[in-house]
Amino acid sequence: MTRWVSGLLLVACASMMGGSEAVAQGSARPIRALLVAGGCCHDYAHQKDLLTRGISQRADVKWTIAYDPDTTTGHKNPVYEIPGWSNEFDVVVHDECTSAVADMAFIENVLRPHKEGLPGVVLHCGMHSYRTEGWNKNVATPWMQFTGLISTGHGPQKPIAITFVDQDHPITKGLSDWTTINEELYNNIAGKLEPTAHALASGKQVYTAAPKKGAKEDTKSAGREITAEAVVAWTNMYNGKTKVFSTTLGHNNATVDDPRYLDLVTRGLLWSVGKLDAEHLKPAE
Image (cartoon, one colour):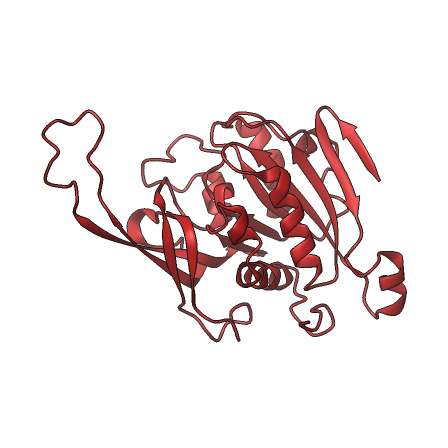
């Protein structure tokens, strides 16, 4: 089923195992997930398909995709304007990039179901969305309280060496460290997560500093090797009861389509809904 609502494309798609047939053959119904995608700076038109297809190859998930083709930083995804927008879902995956949306009434409408216990997954630029007052002053805004991390920017696109710092967590158990293609390493302001959050993986990026534009005297930093490190995957317990999994990885299509990335996000999603088990994970092909 496909329908347009105020410029928003809502696509309901069955899990990759064949929709209702898969439900009949399995002992558990599919997880009902809403993917909210769109906004600035990323190829969401393709990434929405890479992400949902890749996750459904790994877990029994039935998707509804709320894709907003608007590519600005200030556009509000119309799905949030639909009354009861979250009622039919077990989890919401936030993959939007809307840094200039600062309307608190709108943001509260996005957060309300999560405050009430609806699990969430936040990917890449979702961390830099909804920048209300204090976002660049080491203050955890309402949205950052939901994600569990204050992040205000990123470095250049260079490979990131991923290290799983908690190898015993259900999400990361059995996963191996890897190095990404050129990707953006999001910073961690104050060098740590919020008290409600728990680090799963860190990233290290090495690059050569470039001269700052317009700074004639800036010759010392140019050519200097810089090593940046930050948490890149973590969990958060929002409002004391809601499980949220987040990762800042996923700028480029090749990363979103990387089996290692899809394994991580799939396990994070299943953890958030309390179904990271053999009943919901599909055997590796």
